[in-house]
Image (cartoon, rainbow, N blue to C red; front, side, top):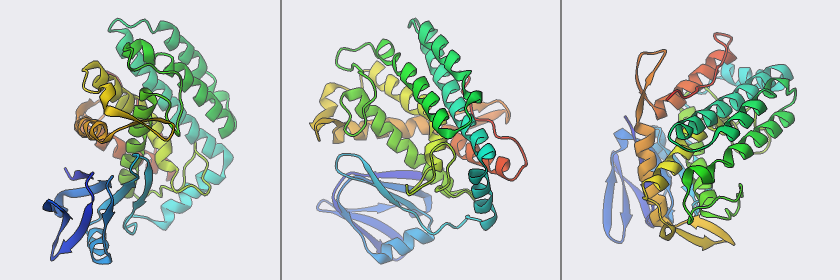
Length: 330
């Protein structure tokens, strides 16, 4: 299993023969390039062309974040698996309104089903979430009636807004109250966690897309326009409840995250560096966790599940098998 490295310090990436290292005032730290999948850069770093050429050969992706923890972009080595045929198929399914809406509905359906799985998990553990569950089930009945992605996004927004009503009941901590979704900037600590977690998930899905024949610039639920990537946003919708939200509930439930892990910035609330490190440490554990896959009959990690979701999408696009989103069954 290839590793992810998170860099918070300021320094310089350098190449030396067939290896690379990160140099700071404290010294050099060599990076295991053969086992390295991606590098998340949160610090101020410098690098040169020799370094970029080398990590390109090794197919290592760099994801950059600013000092507030916001994603700013990726260094994405030349797409070694991209195929013209698959790009044409992706475009065909995007340009055909009926084919596009069919796929978009499945992303929303998968997201809604996984929200319900999370809610049932906590409902079965004593949280009174029956009203929220019933309301979401009612809203999901409208998915198949949506004939445009705009209408579908509106339903998805209603489902997620209802789902968020359960957060205070699940978390039940005075220091972590949630007053509805706010993004840039997040207005409270829960929003800060959701925003940071979603960003990390988007980049994780982007890294997995790189290992397939798919092009991340062509999505179906999220409109393909002048944005950098949209397909990773589509696929991430399915995994947000079971990866990001469950991790937030777990961190708060185990009292691992405290108010001291946050700071006021940009007229909002953000995780500080200690909080981000703690979140990412637990994220790595979460994404490596394995579950029993019903169809395969063996254990697979959540990271592998994301890749499998992309393979299913490829099969749908080439007409081999209809796409069905992954739905968690705890």
